[in-house]
Image (spheres, helix red, strand yellow):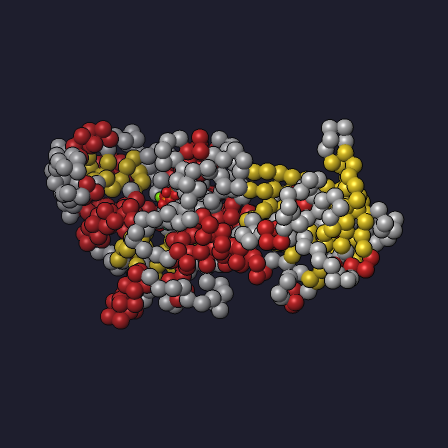
Length: 557
Ligand code: ATP
Ligand code: MG
């Protein structure tokens, strides 16, 4: 962890195991974890849970955490993903002790395979995928041994070497562990350790045409790095006996303990990389970094802070129970963080022109707007005011309900920081739509204070038309309409067609020069951030990160 004054994360059952191991002096009192992503997509918020867990343990126990690319499946992997993973882990606030690739170990893994063969613990099998399936048996029926299971060691060694040299076609042969075809755990029924795949690898090029399977590569990689606690998600629980088997057969430097925890699921959110890739490829979103995506880069572009994501990871905790976290929990983490940190600004996203008839033509006043209501250290900025302003369309109603306290004909409202104004008349176009509202202001209410004790219930935000800067405003909603996308069928049918609304708004002039990724609370509208990619001087673009929960409008209106 880069920052030193980060408090330790709350304890959980994994930390308790580590505490116990430290007490008994296991692993020589070392704590070593790793985060092992497959570079076949961008990291998502589920990975963030695993990152916070693994790197957080290293941070709090003065241990180490490696970043290891599980790059054993070259067909789907790419350097683009490798680069994005590093950037995202760093952005979350973590630093790896060492960076490794499973492919760094290809030679070692091969030599270990030779060892297994020599010990009679692995054999080359000529069954094809379908035949292998037939032999495997089911949950209720034991499998049948492969006819090649008793191949002599020398023949196996010879065939394995020929596999490596590329003398066989893809899928023609595999190297399999010799364990137990009758095991109730199907993972132990002579699992495949190596397959032939004549594909280019993004790091090893064409050097290899056999690639190790995940369980085999993973256990040995962990051991070679002398990981102490190999933390993974629950679906690997049934693989743990195989993980242990591999390490038990071989002379490896360590035997890490695999510990499983439950995956993060979030309502209205989908987290499978395969499906996220589909969304990208079929252009349902603009890319992996679309602010609607549950990817780390998507959240970043949306305006989330690393602090909020880490806080979320701490709050949801780590258990073995499958569950689905309400997306509102994540939203409340970012709200809390931004409420504290984001300066305030006035922005009108659906402009309605208001002319203040009795305000002197050409006059400009500047009001001092505090940047934060409860943190004076954040300073203030000047907000210009003039005769023509924009207000939000929804802050004006021609025939209001009884409890409507914003602007309406004959009604008075407070302009934040400025004056009381009263609506005198409206101008409509040929279709009857209101194009302009005419008001008068009370000069004695300067600063928004009542001159004579008369009450004005509504306070609305505004921008000066002559000074405001046009900006593209993107309002995001959930990407999916269903709580658990894809549960009942095609997840594409559950895409929310209204997940993005783009508006042409006006921002106060102090925002004209803000940098990409700057975060603000637009008063009464929510938290926004300047887009990472599209925002530039002359073309302002802001993304709504999240709405305000107890929106000011609701309380005061
Ligand atoms: P996906 O199924 O989304 O493609 P994956 O598990 O295949 O994810 P990996 O790149 O293999 O993705 O994952 C790297 C690490 O992140 C693994 O240790 C994995 O267990 C963990 N991880 C992945 N998804 C989640 C999740 N939703 N919650 C917690 N940890 C996760
Ligand atoms: Mg995976």
